[in-house]
Image 1: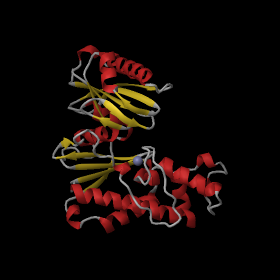
Image 2: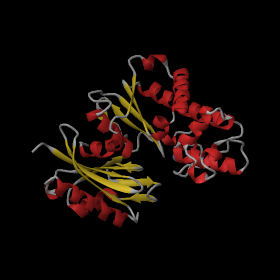
Image 3: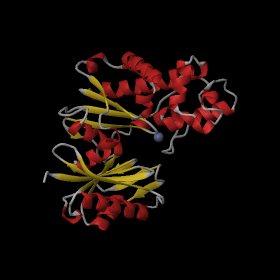
Image 4: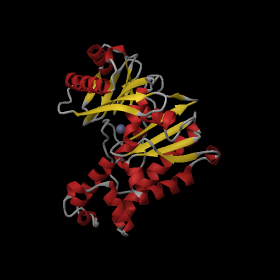
Length: 320
Ligand SMILES: [Zn+2]
């Protein structure tokens, strides 16, 4: 039997557990369950059950494994297993690592979902064999995962890489300050994540902004999304153009600053907003090129994430 590891991807709507071949990154067995009730004790039950199902499908005795890795969509104190803040789960200061360890009788290692995704990409994906890696994800949320000197960099408290919560200053004079899911205002995520872009467009359309986006959404504002803004942009819609110029500048400049500071050999881009909105991606690229320190781009290569939705469970299963 190959060497196996167990990983969990804990998002806001589902928990997915997988048994992974730690030599190849191949998922041997996986089990996904919806989170109907997000209270911590219920989530512990769901995650424990998902782990038992995945382990049993792979013929693994859960009690015999060395540890279980968990990637959580939120800020985690990696060393203590405490989830500080997970807006999608409505959790603050939840000792999830300890609760899960008690439930399954196996040590638990907790990390931010994008940290484990970056680790998965470093071990088996778009950054295999590369020691200095920055992964930037712009989807429903915004975040990053950092690999520095071959190691996952999670900082003194385990909360490094919270890229969505760096503060930015939008360029348009009519852009209102936006509150972020973390409770602060002015976060990059509040202006650029798919959920926040859609919320902003809905508000501005309701306030009378002239744009074709409502028509593209079939008159149903609940269908407004970043990809519809991208469609409108490519159709020449002036509102979408102004919005994308602002969002693209914020993202391109912030990513350039990250690369200037950390000098990675590989930048990995992921998430539906960055990968599914070609017009926005072109603006991000132009703003990145204009802002990044040239010396930090020598030897830099940019790749799309390879592992997709599997990066989290795979990276979690091979957390050291
Ligand atoms: Zn924030």
